[in-house]
Length: 166
Image (cartoon, rainbow, N blue to C red; front, top):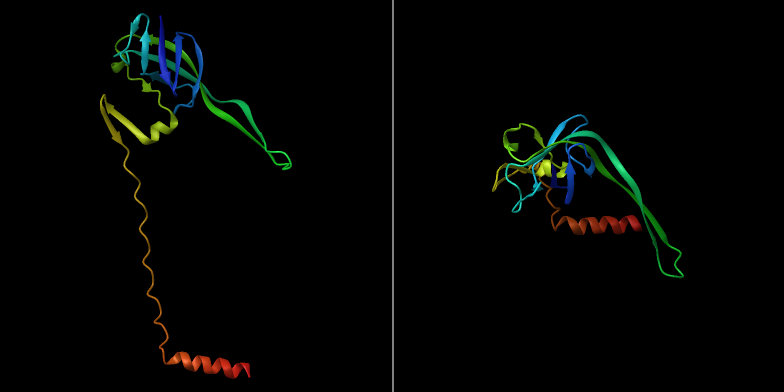
């Protein structure tokens, strides 16, 4: 049986035994994970997701993708150029099982991306609990400033400065 799952903003058609390279997930090698966003299982099409369906997989490794080079050459008479490279972080997973029902009671850790794991924790369908913001450290109180010199002292300073110049 095959399924279409959604993870990392992409959709994958999978069946048991397939090996996938998906966007980085918050899991370590050897751990079992479960994809819960299933769009289609066999001939059952979700609206938008299939209720109770899941795809279980085993994390093989955390890898990096191929290096992509971005080269920019600017206009004539300005010999400026720039090269930037990037390697995407990926997770290599092997699909072990496609469940068309009963995924809620399986007890396997949900597959969550690294950024989403830190920001949002889902409790039940339709409710979202946002992580509490980190409190900013208290600011230290400033020491009181020294009182300004009186207006009467200013002419005295000016006179001393004039004497020093002579």
